[in-house]
Amino acid sequence: MLGTGIIKGLAVTAKNFLGSYHDPKRMVTVEYPEQKTVLPENYRNFPFLIAENAADPMGTLRCVACQICEKECPPQCIIIEKSKDKKPDASGKMQLYPAIFGIDTSVCMSCQICVEVCPFDAIKMDKVYEIATTNRFEDLFLTRERLAKPNSYYHEIHPLEAAEVDGRLAADRKAAEDKAKAAAAAKAAAAVAKPTAPAAAPVVPAVKPPVAGGPTP
Amino acid sequence: MIIAAANSYLERAPLEWRDWAVNLLPVPLQWLTHHLITIVGVLAVFGLFFAFTTVAERKLLGRLQNRLGPNRSGVPKFSILPWHLKHKLFGLTQPFADAIKALTKEDIVPAAADHVLHFLAPVIVVAFSLMTFAVLPFGRNIIPVDLDAALLYFFAAGAATELAIFMAGWSSRNKYSLLAAMRALAQLISYELPLILSVVPIVLVAGTLSTKTIVVNQGFWTFGFLPHWFIFTPWGAAGFLIFLVAALAESNRSPFDLPEAESELIAGHLTEYSGFKYALFFMAEYFGLTALSGLGVTLFLGGWQAPCAFLEFIPSYLWFMMKLVGMIVFFIWVRGTLLRLRIDQLTRLAWQFLVPLALLNIANAAFWVLTSHWSGPLQLVRWAVSLAIVVIPFLVMGRSLTAGYAPRTYRYAP
Image (cartoon, rainbow over all chains, first blue to last red):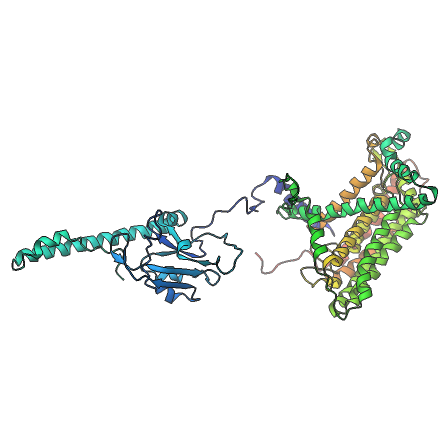
């Protein structure tokens, strides 16, 4: 009969109307500033730099200013200036560090290529999305100080990925230590075998064996 | 009971306040003040009604689509005040924020436009849609102007808005505006016919064009709880349905919102309007909707009459407003449900379906008037015949019109 479709349709919307008051499954709206959805694990927007120590982020940046990300960045939004001096990194090895590290987020396209090319796991993708500012020049250009965030924060936002990275870094470090120990042992054995150089023998244990801060590139 | 209710203080209050205010002034000014107060009253009540209709529409549409609707706008913080109301007030202040936004927007007039007509169109459309309120009886004693030919006046004033729509389209000097205005005219004139034809039975049975008398004629109850509203007769129900469809089309409401279809056209005849003039067109649209709903309430739903005798203690104007709100909510519900028609479907529905049905319904009303002296078992015959006159053509015409169209099969859909 003509008009039955209209009545059926009216019934559907009436159900929607009544259901929206008591059925949370129907109301999927999240009222944003007060309520927030949980972002998926792999959500990403802009990169940040990982610092080993939250108390001294500038001193413990993993970044060694190798500038690979700067060269790989498709929109060229990264600027890095190497330091003149060297500082010991987390594992005590002397490394360069970025005197200037800047990311222009107004240019960044969130492609994650910098993260993929970084051999030191020093740059990762962040999850902050409330990035509106009142100044489109200074506030959108993230400096070293604003980019550095502790490793614990990385664990917070990407727990699985961070655990994997930390495990890998620890394994690398251990392998390097083992290798250094083996080298030292071999050297010691050589020194024992060659007593013509007695001066070298007592020095070897005093010198700390060089331990790689990360995987050798 | 009826006398007591008619004389209760609440019933008389609006008039007494008006008369008190009028009597404060010298005699030469009294006539003018009397009418000015009426105009200001209508403007204030229906201006606010319009404002809250917009927010109610948005909130209801939201709920019908499982959304929340606007619930953000609260009260702004005034720096001179020491306190600040932090509650959002359920977004009820939204229309005022919208009004401020529309008022402060730039008013752009095309360089080649006819400036006078371009300015006059929104003014006229609002003026004429407001004029229709003059003959609606809002309560037992409240009617702005008690005309003998009220219905005639209502449709004359209502039809004049169509002129304004064409003015808007033509004066914009924009071919899309002009085309849209022509299409809007085609729709409005098509539906003017079933709208008026659906009202003719009322005039036939009530024997008057005066809205006040038509409401009084609906004012009794069988056994005290069955109201004698015209919708509870076969011809009244059929007329009301035709009236509803035609009123939807006349007020450019979904599913007949072709003249200004936001999602398909630019904005129809409103393409070249911005800022407050655009808001005025919307205001006129809502005024038109409210006025037509008010007319529907007056003619079919018993106007200000209470549905049961024992509910008469509620003042009549509140009954009118409740019925009016009910009609508006129904229109919003329909808007949240139905899809927009195509222009050919739209005109086909009017000319091939509504107009013949409305004409038959006039014959039905004539039959009802001629058999008004039938009583006893003949009453049942009268009802059966009257029902058959509208239901059978409805079924037959509905079947022939939808033949080959429904039910639709979707070949590729699962």
